[in-house]
Image (cartoon, rainbow, N blue to C red; front, top):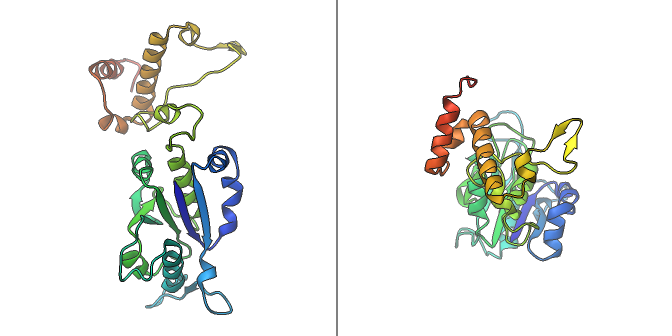
Length: 252
């Protein structure tokens, strides 16, 4: 998987990309993140990438020329006007569709993705209309730029690439991957300050352990994110268990 990141702040990326799972994935050739400075594609002595908005108003707007030139150059296009981008060009913006695990899975099927990090009041609308193929938001709030969202997308998508995680099924059990919140985890020691690990987890009975984990995931989702249950794939046993939760006199 290759990520092409277009940004005005390339220095933001190395500290995170050169750590932990992402670093190991890059070393093993499973992921390649290339960060491009949009300022390198300007042609004035001040490397201007923004200007005041037409019609007035506060803030500055990212100019179209360096953005188009950066993306066209890196993706090997003469001009976007003569042919569409060969890979998804994603603009990170609060106005986009909300990024979630399903979108991460969708993006993980591509071999190459371009991520455009907005700044200031946003980008010239002609970038959105003629260059960007999709707009992605990480939530209903506003950040100072698209760099953090880009890192979040890179991280979430990279985890889904086969071979990245030590456990081949690790990503499958993550919260949201199975449509539910993840079950609780415990490790050594078996008792800490009087708090013991649930007996079932040290029983060695894998069937009981799987049943306990599923029920814990259902319980957590029921109490913390009941909205997720509407879209989750539930077995008849799952539905029966949830009905039991609903009838629990302690639930309000």
